Length: 623
Ligand code: FAD
Image 1 (cartoon, rainbow, N blue to C red):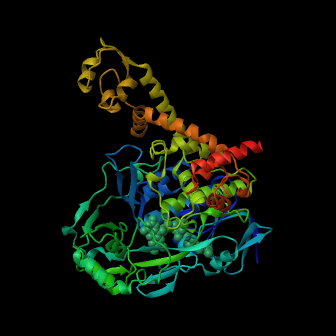
Image 2 (cartoon, rainbow, N blue to C red):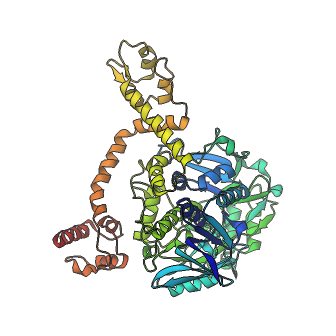
Image 3 (spheres, rainbow, N blue to C red):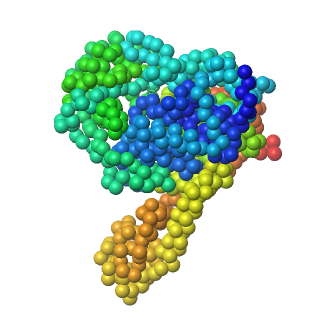
């Protein structure tokens, strides 16, 4: 049966990528359908209930700057907030929120259900309608056909999902959810490169059976950081602490004694797991010299006793999981509420996507999230937003958009994926960005909100708040630039003791803020020089912009140099044997990935500066 209504955009999957994709397309005014297995699991966190962290927090702020939902839901669901790296420079500071799983899900669902132009439908998608190499819609498990101009697939770990607990295996998308078998089979018929990856999760524990008195409490920061640029402390629920404990030699011995029952170490699992989120058996074997590993005991919510022991993800058999848990200080009598497990699933080589996340082989079909080889809610949400907005642009025959590596971590993420591909679950780090100082959490709105507004992603409320904030910062910077302190100035007697070398000539307030020993807030407290901006976030911007101006300008010069290469387009389907002097290896890599620009080509591993020069010479000759 054909559903009576035709949509502009259909999004399959209501996880982190799917919800951002559907919301983005609908915010842009397109008739959007979100098709998902189960309405109750919209916005479900499959693994640990936490949003943000280093690199990931940056992505969340960027999603927020473009009008997305993740940061707002994290503010409503966060029960322990921290700023990581708070003593380091602003480029690597990152927000992290431990979340109440149910509150987070409820916040996402509320945003989805109140989004104009968006319909939600509960059914598995089993097939795609493809005509003349262009997607036309989807078919559900009960044979219902939905037609649309573009389709975004965000099916997470569900494609051919295979769950492992010890040497037992069963099919599943994640514990308690069915896998996507029919869709996986259909996608394998299409010309995409496909492979398997693996991820895992720890057993969950009943807090009533844990002795917290022997663990170290870890409260959140006070005042609590706020995730969304529109967020308020009043949105945040009650705050509670996490706890820290450790594995020990006994734990490690239990693991070593049972490796012959591990699906990873007996070769049953073939997919590669996340390097930076290894299982406990992996940690014990890889870091054999370590006599303990840290475990964060994280509450799953305010209204449940379940705990998430972060650091003991495992796929060992259940009896071994029990012994591991009972060997740990404070958990000697712990009751496991859910066993840990590993899951293997299909992912598609992201080099078969353009930077808008559209597939190269089927027009109008977009992939986002775990299906592209990434791991993490934030990486998924950011890709979802990008795929959703590009699906909307495609449906309205507008040009695709993706941010550059100098504009956003989202730009770094899609550029890394689509030019380099990935062999293991890809997660974001600040070290992946070459222009870190420009891509800070605190300026994500300055980098992206105007573009979001132009694309139709940013509503009037956000736009007004953003414009007012930018105006305040600009006016204050002008004031600091134009206000001077003279040697005869009254304020000098208060300023000089704060300076390493006293002032013996006139100086602008801006110059004084730039001094390493001085802060904006300190200077503004001096009579006649303040007051400081009342909004602490805008005040922080003024300080960061002034203090780091020199470094920021230097990065901008570098970007300007790079931009020439970035803008030099390469032919769309091109046989690189035509370029004289390229090695066979370079020809093979370029032919395989067909980069869109010289900039992209330069980032493919093994493409040398000499090869880039040959390409430039060739392009010049072709005129
Ligand atoms: P998901 O959140 O998986 O959402 C997919 C959605 O698609 C679901 O709503 C599903 O019901 C729906 N769906 C699937 N197939 C269909 C279909 N055919 N029709 C309709 N709907 C469909 N990340 C980390 O960063 N660290 C970790 O340690 C970690 N461990 C994990 C452990 C496990 C066991 C699992 C399952 C995941 C883990 N993750 C981890 C990954 C994290 O959950 C994902 O990165 C993130 O959820 C991906 O978001 P997504 O939107 O791509 O997919």
